[in-house]
Image (cartoon, rainbow, N blue to C red):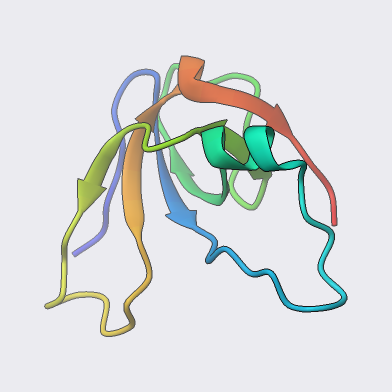
Length: 91
């Protein structure tokens, strides 16, 4: 099964939050309200993002997908609307 978002939706893989040494953390209040994700697929109306982009999104934005039959790992997958993206970022 392949997930193909429609219109202005994006399929993203959420990154786990880490607080170990060596990882740059965002200030407390900002960190509480944003989450990091990687774009896995884009809908046909999305113009500013492409597969592989790293993005910050609004906290808990989008629809959480629970697809254990497809994805064996415990990663979080979501479908989000383009306007929930706050910005792109680079490592």
